Image 1 (cartoon, rainbow, N blue to C red):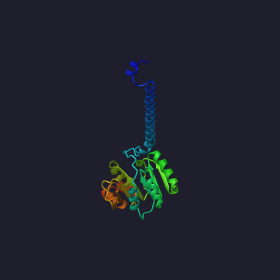
Image 2: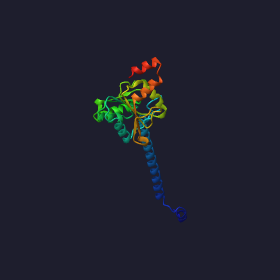
Image 3: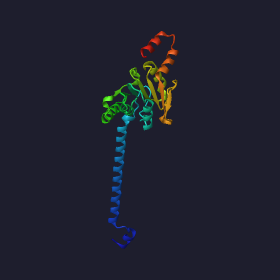
Image 4: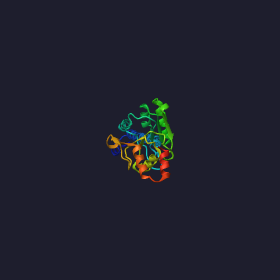
Length: 229
């Protein structure tokens, strides 16, 4: 190479080739990392989506796990209670499992099949499968007449409809524990917790008495109420 060529191109040819190779390698590594990250996010979404999908179709009720404080407040509200318990929209089964550990025969109703199977697995793993049951079912198509204790993590849009359903179906000795949102017209016996962890406790004898007063003088409705008392 002439002296003029060296002055015009002071970087040796070998060094230039090495720099180009490093840049290509870095780009390839970047593409691999980006692809791996994208695949991980897709896998995470695919795994989580079945659990996060709305569980009750009449009213959109997505799965939001109960906090530890909410679980404790529910159990405190039902202290010294007995009889079968049901969690309406039982999610991952944590309320049902915690209640079973406190001596309840506990059931959960949930429309999301992934959550039902996951709950059954958790109950088996924690040794309470004999005192728990989980059912894939729409709450609006089930009767709750056999339950003495009812727990519900609802949303405002469903509470009025559920109020009417439970008034018709529950026995007078039942207790209802509402979490996150209260029922619109029932007067609670007491509350526990605060903020998002608040629970409202209702006595079925009280709200069924009110229903009797409201329907007094209509024999057909009285017969319906009596059949569920």
